[in-house]
Structure formats: structure tokens, C-alpha cells
Image 1 (cartoon, rainbow, N blue to C red):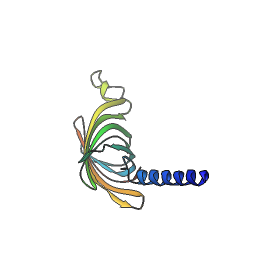
Image 2 (spheres, helix red, strand yellow; image 1 turned 180 degrees about the vertical axis):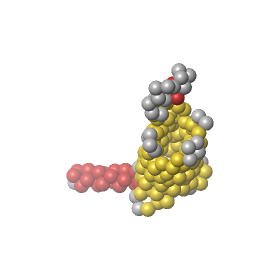
Image 3 (tube, rainbow, N blue to C red; image 1 turned 30 degrees about the vertical axis):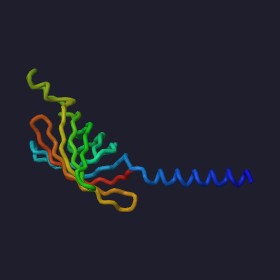
Length: 169
């Protein structure tokens, strides 16, 4: 008799816990991004790829914070990393803005360069700002997100169009 009561209590507790976990909001969003980037200063187009992470707070409208990281493949690669704030004004739509650093290499200086111009060569680290939007399309457990973002780096502006594949948990 005691075993039956314990068994029923355990089954009841498991039932309650599975219902509670199934109704929790998914707050983490991880995605790989792929795309192309147009760089205004040199009229270059480069392939880009990276990783995005967002943690969503339980607010209405939904707000999240996260990390964006990507690389733009040009003749000299550019690597960006930034912290971002996400706003979800509609169910599957989100806007974001972020700030961080951009790491790139301007190459080896020629022998006849002046001392004033020497700072323009070699490894460069600058601040970057990004504003963007994306739309979430759910396909099974995956999220497919076409996205568009605008980057500001020094006097250069870049436009990035891509596609993200990720999931929420």
C-alpha cells in the first residue's frame, strides 16, 4: 500500500513538473549567420558569417541582450564583436542595435611612408556600431531569419544582408 502511494505521488510530481517545464518561455536564442556585406568606402562586397546569442527577458514587449560576432571575408578579413540590445515589437520581428570592436589589418606599410601615415597600416582596432532587423520563420525546431543590418565604422558604412539559422531553448 505504501509503495502504491509513493508511486502515485512520484507520477503526480513528474506530471506537474513536465507541465511546468513545457510552459516555460524559451529565453535563449543561438544562431549562425551567413550573408554578404557591401562596404561603401571601397565598393567591396564580401562574404560574412558569424554567431549570434540572445537572452530574452520576460517583459512585454520582449527585450533581450546578447552578443554578436562575425567575420567579413575580403582580401584582408575583418572580425567584429559586439554587445547588443534586442527589441521584439511584434511576435516574429525583432530590431537590434549594438556596439563593439572591429579588428582588421591594413597590411604592411611601404618603405617610403611618412611617420604620420604609419598609423594607417598594420593591425587596427576600432569601435563599430550596428543597427539591424530580422524576421523569424519557424521550421520545426529551427528558426530561419532573414536579416538586414547597417554598420558604422569610422567613416565607413556597410550594409549587410544575410540569413540566420538557429534555435531557441
